[in-house]
Picture 1 (cartoon, rainbow, N blue to C red):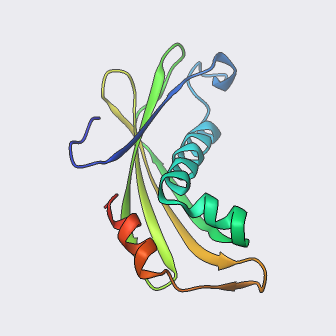
Picture 2 (picture 1 turned 135 degrees about the vertical axis):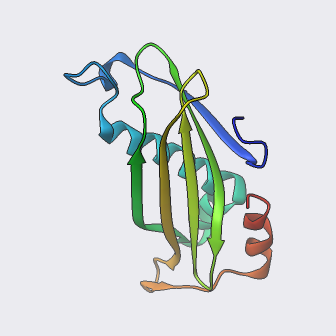
Length: 137
């Protein structure tokens, strides 16, 4: 990991098909990398399982990415993710995307709400779930 206080990291291989006319990774792929890291967070915290069992789970409501340095093929991208905040029914994730040399290439922020898809309403984050999510702060 690039940052010792980050507890969740995912390394993905950059595919040649992710390149654009300028011979670097197209910006849309940074969002896909963040999505992979977000899904990893949902898996390790049990949010994905909660949805599978109850149709209650996270729903992305906002995402943002600031580009700092290009990524290139061949290579890898490492996404380090940590919880930025946990509120009543929403939480935020902070993603840092690094190249193989440890250069910060992008920084992203997600906001998700815990949503009950059965009744189309948000739900309060339980104390147990809050505790699990806090491990990644």
